[in-house]
Length: 514
Image (cartoon, rainbow, N blue to C red; front, side, top):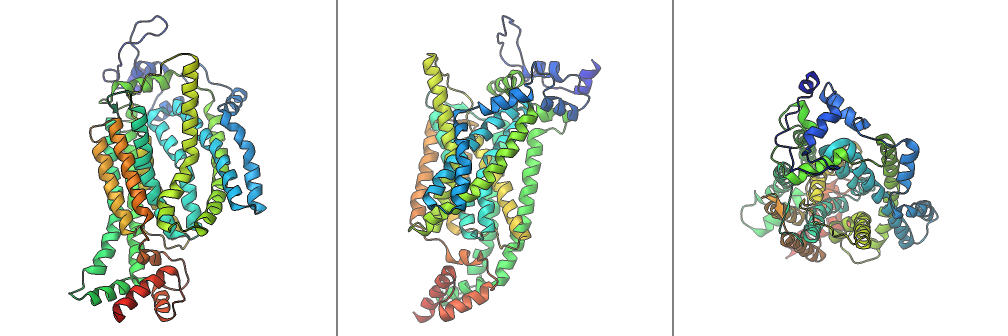
């Protein structure tokens, strides 16, 4: 009794799920009952977390030899790991860029599959909340590495477009496809209500934070001009200056710190909403029965690897992924340089789709394997009532964590990365945010709403194909020892400067001469 009082489990009533049969036993099972029997001897929340992470309370935890064997046999895709050294050799021997790209792409596929499998295994030891956070972070690994690689190559305009493109991909296309495919045999699916309610606020705040530097720049550009168009255009050029960029950098770095703080506090709330230590590993009392059944499965399912072997594997795969993704970025740049694709479309659509394509391939392969197994066994796969909304969490993490982290990393490395985005990008981010919030407002989704999200993503892709980009923003992101003002002056005088500066200067010249 003392141990139960120390445990402070307050969830028996609201976590009780409908009666199930366990080997002929008709007594109902609940996450609370299983949780008590496994971790009732823990003296504190920290002990409970350690007990679950180390596998205490489980019937069986695999040893190292068995864990390594199960890791190697986790998927047929693991055979593609043999391509990894070939991809690296092809890069250093300067093979054709298209060949290097294909080899790097094939190398990333088994890595993504291993991260997914390892993340699901760690969820058994971490629980749904912490497990989902780990899976979300691992799934963002490729895009994060890609963003950091672009930052160090000083492709800041392409980096900004890619950041927006990754957010849109995880906000619209991926969850939309999931809602449409998984919801076609059921009237609606449910989202985690406690989670989706907070997500709407986080998503809106993250997007509005990118709107602030844009509004600041727009106000400087047009707020002080009296009447003539000539003054307006002259002011537009004057606003693109070292002083303005310096002010925007200060604003962006302050916003970045605040966004990271918000994300940390939001995760703290999700894991421990009431401030009681026992709640960190428990579901919220208002959650759907299907979520309680899912947590019960995590508590009782037998893992295929021990947590330490799984963590070592994840670290090794992330290291391999970081190196390979960097080579993938370098090889795909030749595609942009040798084509007529604009930087806007390349960053908004192509790079995010390519970065996710390996993970998408893994998802399709696993889905087909499941379908084939069920067909051979002549079993009908019951549609899940739980909607797969994890991709929305990916976009929120990218908005509130990775994007501000890239801004701060640019600050530490002397690169002028800021949150002043192209007006077009800000507009589609705000529109996508409102659409997703409307779709998830009732914590329910259906296939029609998924189709709407997909169509809106296609609309964005179509419009972006014809959009040339905003030259002022590109100039404000130039990595050069020469200041923005000097660069603009030189462009106006001789035309011998960057494309962005030349475009702004030409616009100014047309106004003066016309």
